[in-house]
Image (cartoon, rainbow, N blue to C red; front, side, top):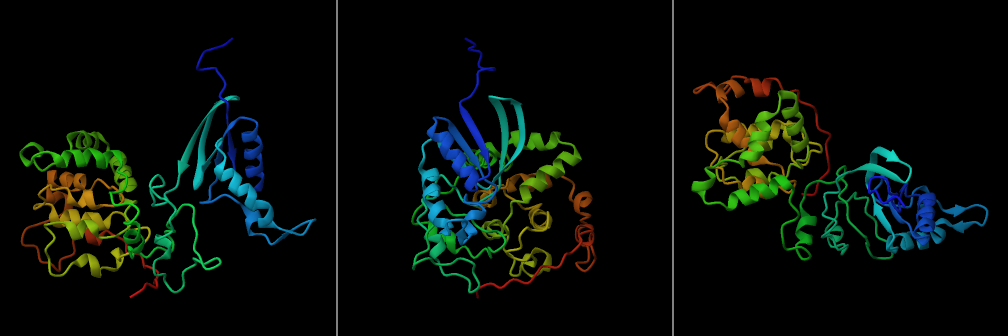
Length: 330
């Protein structure tokens, strides 16, 4: 008998698509003893059938047929649901495939979300698409719809009752938090050298891709600015500029954070409060430390005593794109 771990077949099956066909296939395989990974690109399983009224030829309600299967698939011990995800790469051979799955962001920690629904029951915008069913709003797991989110923060406040601790941290943010626990004389007001060395070794294209990937997570909550001990201006240009309006999804890359780095380049104390506050775990301290190590005159064309009305490279070379008007609650 072949006991080589590299050739031994795996008793698991991946099913693509969480429609009625994928659900039924998953249930049949699970009942046969296979471990099933059901991958669905949308946030929930059910597919088109969940949107139908009556089905041919029995004229039965589609949900009357589908609902029991949805419940069974969600509770079956041999089925693992992977929603809001897509298969990016498949390698290997029959019986031992290796599949790379990319999950799209839900902006919710699924391991901590209890499905209580408190965040969905906060005061809703007048034109919200969220509807009540029989007087209740019920959810299994929450997902924030970035196309409708206005960054009001009500859902975060409602979730405090269920989760009093800070949400999960990425590996980089965890390193930074450990770094911030060090005494000031040991950390020297700089980001962990491992991350800074990694950035320094990147070429220009890789470095741009790295910051593009990190800064594209920004949801424009302005928490980094509000908590910064250096930002003490009576009026903040970041509030009035049309190209960095609050709640713009996605934000213009990377103007907002470049302006902040430019603003605190010579005064950042390396406290890390901006990064600790960021709900998207962006390595903001590394941005400020990287800028601090550069020549500001070359990087930003900064010249002491420059006329404030003089157009500078940072602003002059940014193409402003109009932002669609959005209705928000006062």
